[in-house]
Length: 417
Image (cartoon, rainbow, N blue to C red; front, side, top):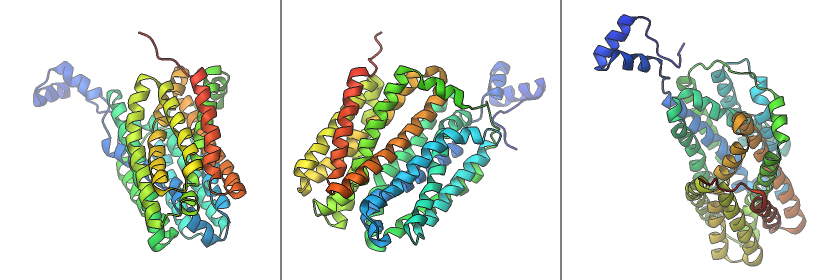
């Protein structure tokens, strides 16, 4: 069984280590108790994040093809995103508690196996209920994985390497943001929408295999419970932060989930053009993550206000000039860039509001994010089915305006030094 610590059992071993490595005995003792870095395991977690994000957002690039094939409305097909998000919210809060006595390696392998199962079921879904079942399974995997990934990273590398490890893990999200939507749209146009989920299945199998061979045994720690989360929700600063996040994320995903129907029905773009615009969205999101992290490092409030204001403006532009191919392409690309300011901004705000219970605050953050995705998919779906493809941007305009105003009024101010 692997262990996160290297041990030296006798003074002679310390002396040998010191002589072999040309260091002092004191340095050899320090090295002996320093946590081992499990970087291959960190990279396998990054692969897991990539697979989860890709699977979660594939419906946004395949919505019209899925709805046509399954003979349902675009709004109904969008509820595939809703099912994943709602279950993900529940899993984020409950998974650490339900599995608190289990080896964390076994838990992560089980979650990755569920990701494989979800993609296979989605690729072979004969009807809408079967597709929903696949997306429910994905929600369990997604919520559980996200809620525990940071805590696992903290145990897989020394504390001074934790920030770098999280950066590697979140790189999987950035890469998926760039390629999932355009590649999914392209594959759907060439081989049919099921081919994209088959490709996701291959990625998830590779992820599971890599985790089998790289994740060390990790005994459970602590005793997670709901009491701490309940206490956090009684704090005014937490309630404001979570409400602003709920509004911002629901508005974003109302627009993003139904962006393909808008481009096809309002802008009248071809499948190849849709893929190109979605690639622009992904690239915009990649650089937006970098810029958002830089801006949030100076003021998380300013990062959120910047992203919210820009998305609200872009939603209004799409409502007014969404028939223009150039305007739509630029607006969708900038939308991806603007959303990049949100993750680090909200994460910093919420963790600072609960610095004494950062892990529990992280669970609440994941849960609220998933609820927001579901809210956006439901609200946007109702708007799209009721008033047409421009319903998504209309929902986004209202929600992002409220989120930005709330953050501007009650958001955290920079700490003066």
